[in-house]
Image (cartoon, rainbow over all chains, first blue to last red; front, side):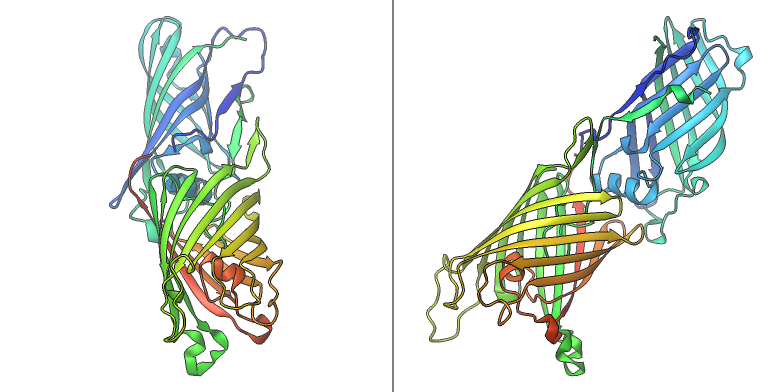
Amino acid sequence: MKKIYILSLALCVPFLSSSQGKYFSRDGKIDFHSKAPVEDIEAHHNQVSSILNTDNGDIVFSMLIKGFEFEKALMQEHFNENYLESDKYPKAIFEGKIMNFPDVDLTKDGSYELEIHGDLTIHGVTKSYNMPATMERKGESLHGVSNFKVAVADHNIKIPSAVVDNIAEVVDVNVNITYQPYKK
Amino acid sequence: MLEEETQDEVQLEYAYATFKSTRIVNTQSIENVPKKDLLFVIQHRFGRINGGIYEFFGLDYSTIRFGLDYGISDRITVGIGRSSFQKTYDGSIKIKLARQVEGQKNFPVGVSLFSQASLITLRVSEGDPDPTTQQRMAYVNELLIARKFTPSFSLQLTPAWVHRNLVTDEEQPNDIYALGAGGRLKISQRVSVNLDYMYQFNNPQKGSIYYDMVALGFDIETGGHVFSLHITNSHGMLDRYFIAETTGDISNGDLYFGFNINRVFHLGKN
């Protein structure tokens, strides 16, 4: 199932004239790992959209749930159909802020440790998260990585008792994204 | 916030899971086995419910079919099977010709071709002429046309053609043409109700010996398995039997209880 069924395309609507502090990505990578006694499951998403504002530290992520690719086609079907209900809740969205923003200057080359705080909406349920991230600036582009955990029950995703040994209660999420200056 | 600037747009969205398993109830559904997956199907059909308590409502008798279906690619599934009913072997291929898609490309339905050959190996009664292997064979070709209307509602139309090399009854044509209609309605995340019907156009003995197949089933999905519980007026589980040789008269209460177990094995990475 290498074929990508869903391609997410981010459309940029020109917003005010000053967009120099905005950085954009439409091919960010997010993967998650579930380690359970019976099986390990992982899924990858390669079309995550995100905007980072280096003027005020705002950061936004948006992705289509159907864009997650699994090793087994049946897992992907169950993930969409039974657990995430992606017909009903097609997107996951994160809206956050770099909390230590005044202390880091992302306009200069270098590597920065960030503390990000924001709201993550999955499966129609919004929850606040604090997550550490590393952002590296090299010339024009910014490369960010982060790792955090999501408890599936926090987002009202129910795991039936029959497969409780197959799916972890807490999944590991990795973010890996490269921003380019946002051009109109 | 910047949310309004990131507006995701779906370019191509293919319909998936139009049905939960590779059968609606009796009739093949548009679902294939994913690439490099092996589907093991155990099908059970008991005797007639109207046999009463003496035959424990049919449960004293049981016919069974074992089937193995393998996904050569996401579009092509090949299968083999053996039914205890008439001691029949079968081989089949199901090819996805078109997929239902929305977005930049639009196509309203999924279309598949299903082809099956079967061989009856039941010995004839002593004194009767023994048919040759060729005469014992039958072929079924079906076009499966399905649409997933909503996440919980799907319909399928199935034009079908059955060719039997030998028919024992002189009144029976070798070829039977039929049109199937079936659908499913999800009643919960993991359970769906399925209806399956097959109308025969040219069976001269329809209404006297043979009847149109009707089936009502429930698909229950548990993760790696799909269980299908159903009642139908067809004793045979293979396509040639339920399309052209269904003998149960519903008005007489000739119904059979049956269940299928579908188990998928992953034989390799995609």
